[in-house]
Length: 348
Image 1 (cartoon, rainbow, N blue to C red):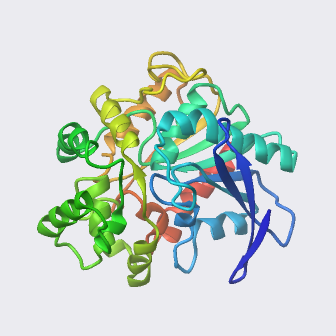
Image 2: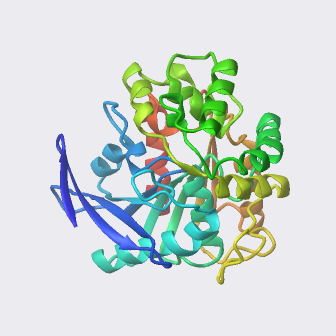
Image 3: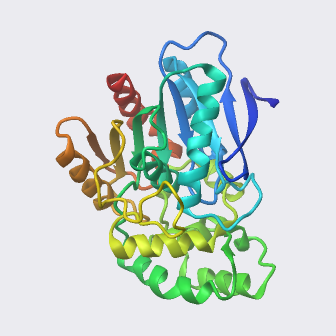
């Protein structure tokens, strides 16, 4: 356990072992006063880290949650760039990482239940855990961008179905840092393609991110939604991403919803084949201009869950936002956070 102070924010870093022994970690945001609202776990997406929830904005989602009275925890699961690079899949995170993280928090705090805010592939893998009945302590899931259904732009479908099988023969990973330094021939090839096709800004990592994760120019945010400082900060927040994951998401995109690839005990092969084994209330959030996963992803997931239990779950499609700017946008504290807090409060 390590205590870190970042400005006025005090964080405790707590290592934990996933179900297969892979070393992950939790970060607890320390409070000056006892919490008055439920514990909230934040789960990042692919090829980033928990720090993605702490952009250099005046007010972050972590600040908003702490100020509202929540006990805030962040999970660095096996897709985190702060952990050892590995050939991760959504299956392994769903079966081994998220259930272990939830158990570690419950054991440490004595909490009987918790809420979760999950982003992108943190959302898909966490939803897999929930559907499989592996995180029964979680009563509310706020899911951003994508959850059960995987609807991507046509260009992304082409890259997933044609580009991924070819590139996987050349490299076991992608890395937006190749925009700064491309150490191998495959990395140099990707950088050349990005430089030839992406002219939306001068941030080399930003452009690589858009090529790696979507079909937009850019894909994960709208430039006008970011401050200059946050746009520069992005360059240190993206790294290694397993090609095994891209192969799985290609299979999911072809099916239209989450499917397994690793045949692990405790996970279904098809996550839409049977009703979810969770009573959690799910809040589906989507940026209306998302060019990574189209808003239809969350709309279909909401329709599916609403069909199983009507007037229980919720859908929010946010105008003017894309994918990650829902959390890191310059006006997210004004446009998005109040809605997230209200949904957590209503569920509690």
